Length: 320
Image (cartoon, rainbow, N blue to C red; front, side, top):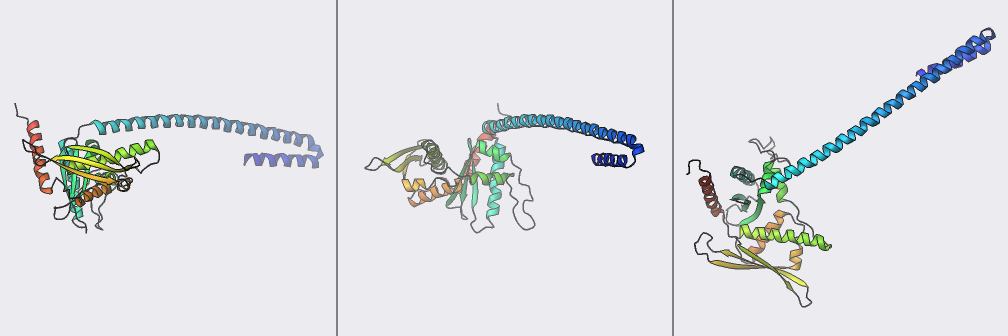
């Protein structure tokens, strides 16, 4: 606006200088002075703008440096938290609280068509969770959560007493304990890959998951896996042999053997499943070939009692 006023003043003064010759020199001098003032003002504003731009550039540069430092600090904190989750020993109290989450899930399932009763078995290396049908006779679902995963779940917001809204909808979010559990249960296993390195890693994950189910749901003490080949020397199936004790608490154990065979199309179909679907499919396969789960609903309470009794004995404050 200031530039416009100065320019109009300059033009007006020049026009007046042409019409009134007696004041020509005066008006001409004023016009030149106005033009010089305009130029000086313009230069000053440009200089001020340049200084402001330089200051903004410095501030932006400082902000970028601060952002990079904060990102580095955040990454370091994430690594520290990740290390703690994987290395901190999970307390017995924490595991009992974790099992309590599945007790809440059991209560919720009572109001659904496919009601499941969840039982949590506290282990030294984590928590095994068994989902039985309404009559608690048949095992339907199974999950094993390592100590690190239990710690991860316990880092979430605890589900309060009022977790059902006015519309009878359970308030489960990705940041509370049940939401984190749901994410772990529905974690996707790797897809089958055409790249040899990626496929080797994916295969290890599948076989590791298979061993986990057999170890905790079928009490497998030893597990061996071997590949069968066809006449062309190509792999055609995976044979899994495992042994378990008829009575794991007996002084002289009597070991029994069982075997599963996965033909390659069946094995390939296990890639890309969720952990929940993978475990359920393996349990159903065992039922089809006559292999029953070796952990029943009524066994879990007894085993937890034994585990708790040992822990209480170990932590008893008045022992010698």
